[in-house]
Structure formats: C-alpha cells, structure tokens
Image (cartoon, rainbow, N blue to C red; front, side):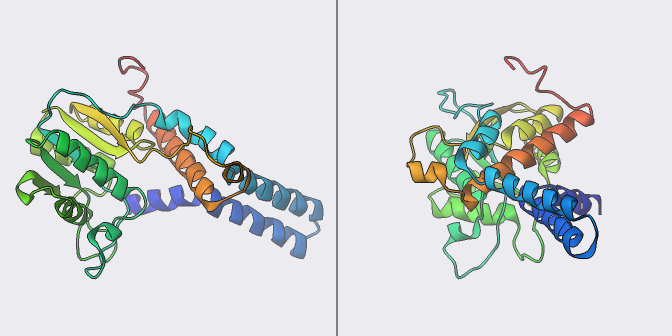
Length: 261
C-alpha cells in the first residue's frame, strides 16, 4: 500500500499532471466562482510554466547538474559483476525483445552489455519484479534482451523480487555480498541509486547510461520550439530532485560525505 501511495503522490507532483490540475482549478474558478482574476492568474501561470519546461534550454539546464554527478565509466580495472537496474517494461512475445523495454530501460541494458563486452568474465545481474499484470518480471525481460545481444545465459543472474531501488540494493547484497561491481542505471537516477547501494554496505562503481541533457550542438529549431521530449527531460529532473529531497528529509544524505563530492 505504501509503495503504491508513494508512486501515486510522486506521479501527481510531476509537471504535466500537476499543471493540468492547476489549469483545471483555474477553469473552475472562471466558470463557477466570483474569483475570476484568481482563475486567470492560475491558468496563465500554469500555461507559462508548461511552456518553459517544454523548451530544451530550460529542461536540460534543470537536468544537467543531476546527470553530471558521475562520468561515463571507461575504467580499465576488471570487474566480476555488472548490475543493471530495472525500469519501464512490458512483455509482448510477438515483439522484438528490445521493444519490450520502455523509456529508460533499453539504454541501461545496452550500456550493461557494453560493459560486459569490456569484461566478458563478469556476471550480469538484472533486477526488477513483475509489474502490473505482466506474466514476466522486469529482470527476466531485460535478461532476454541481453541474450539477444550476445550475452550467454550462463553469464546472467536475474533478481525478480525487488520492486524499487532500495529493495534492489538488498537483493544484490544477498547475492554478491560486498564484492565490488559496476552499477548501471540512468545518469539522472544514479545519485539516488548510489545512495541506496552505499547505505546497504555495498561497493558499487557508478556506470551511468541514458544521458539526456544535451550539451553538444543541436539545431536552432530544436532549441526554440517546445516539445514533449524536453518536457520529459524536465520531468526526470523534477522526479529525481524530489527523490533526493526525500532522502535528505529522512537523514540519508550520503552525497555530502562521499569522497570528492
């Protein structure tokens, strides 16, 4: 129950549902109350904020500080385990395997496979329970994609019980103890993920995937025109900022004491 409530509250605080809710309140004030000015202000403010969050310079400026916390991992020291965290997925047996990984999941798996090719002696660990009415777990679907990309089944371990990052950390600890490993997740998620794994007494090496905030050149049209793509970048920045704030409220701020941070 708490897990579902946490997810629902987090979803409602994201830009699109929150701003649509504010606009709806503004419309109600305009149509059914004497608070005409208040309704106009609320609708205008919500529209302007939605516009700004849908522009690339604004969205990526919000997201970049979170994603830059850890650089892409290209270290030369060998590793024995590569942990790839779960994300969005579905399961349709008629689709190409990679099509079943949604949003952030496919870049995580492909980065994990890249790291495995650099360390073919390593075991790949995929995490994530079954979500909704899916007949397959997140971990098993991701593992199937890795196998389709050339990773042998003998090099794969699936942990299909964890529902969130905290549970993933505990499941990995039960599997490999405090053995060092690469932790692969989206660049914007890694600061929170590293917190959970370090707090569990593990020894992760951050290996970010799915960097989104663009610093290289793009066309002027992409920078100037609002797009749902950039709104999605703003959403990730806000979601992860809320998650980091929640960790600090609970007194679990490891970032301030982490070496070099």
